[in-house]
Length: 424
Image (tube, rainbow, N blue to C red):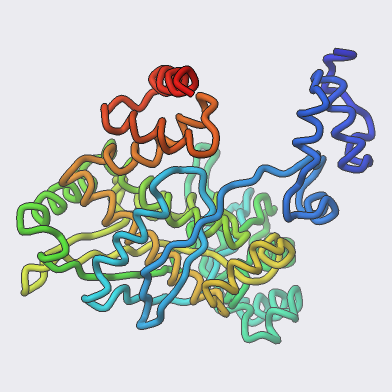
């Protein structure tokens, strides 16, 4: 190893190939490792280098297709990018089991995002609040001038709200600009508008502007999905009632809710990632929304209808778009949108909500019947087999033996593989 320093002046100015060469020298990577990182798959080095800083390679995540989905009476194939076993299969199974009940019905509350402006040093905050509210038309003009393209597509400024909050250092005035971002996720648009309005608002309030940034709690951009599973598909009343009991625990206990909602996000984040959208923004908004009552609760709600069938509802913020960022520039993301025929941001959000509900149903049903491990470990066993060195047909052979014995572990996989090699 020639050097162990992380101080590399001008690193950002190098090409991906030259950056990789420097990293290989410092880290002691061998030729095989360098060749592996140089293979960027179906993403060109130039595109990768334009998406983030200091690129040396790409990290490929499996891309699967969820089948069986009927969403708003439309047959829909759904690309999902994830590394976790059983996620795609869970959505397929849930969708198959509610097809006879009409599949998933979805709704969207709108495409409004919030930009926040924090004003500090305001001596009379309640008076300032009214001063700002009285400048609505001035605010509209400044916001819309900041992004005329968005306005030309039917979006732009819609409203303003002003709150007075008290922190450790005293009162602060917090302005919410309500912006319709249409088919864009909208972060850049609302941030630009907040920065344009901030100095004027500070002048009106006789204070100074500090934060000027969007909120990822997009509670004016809610996606909703609902579906029904009949008793025949569930396997009887006892399964239904156990699912309801599992949901009730998630809705009253934060320890269970965290895992329950994580399962929902297994499906949601897989579609968000596949389409080049911001997984962190969606996840942050979802978990913040789960706390809106003052306690962290389930994002889904489960009930029994008049026929005794199980009904599920998912409601969550979904700030996703078709314009800008990786969604526009990543070729695989564009293809994924084509596959699911998501021609508007609203359609994409509604699809994602349906996937989240499907994922939650499958997890709850597995927990209420065979347990989560049976299906998950059957798929996970293949990963363990590959970790042990299995290749080709060996992967299935090793995985099947581990599942049949109920011991899905690396040491067991190594033992099975060794035995296979010795008998060849």
